[in-house]
Length: 171
Image (cartoon, rainbow, N blue to C red):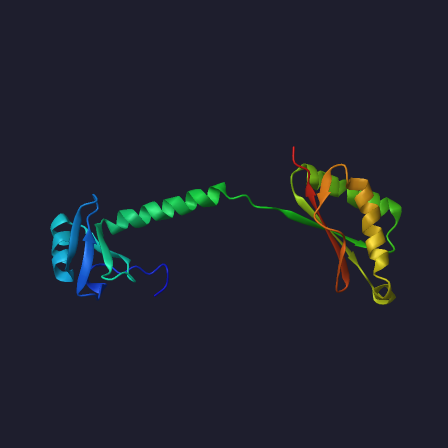
């Protein structure tokens, strides 16, 4: 049984259930059939809420309304969630200074907008033998943007790339 799957009414297999009303009324431990009759009389559903309890706990409620409220809560939570936008800027070891200035200018704009910036230096061919050159390049870039951003960690060598993540400064 998945987390999303909820047993209702006749799908509940237990013979005895601990039954609770929508208004908080406790019916105690009664047979499933009796609980179904009570739910039917009130025009509501019998919903299994704690299948692992002994005996299982059921609640008499309007399941459609309950599901609607759950979905509404999830949508609200999603609205409040903050999406972190990461912009990637690719560099190479043999990049010209004016190209670095141009890319750093864009990085500064992204950081001012509150975006995270990931700098990647791609190592081609023989440059793989000296990945330190990529680290030196990122240190050079870091000196240009350290007033506006925070560095997550030192430049890291990952395969053919040397990466550095810069986040905007708070306040």
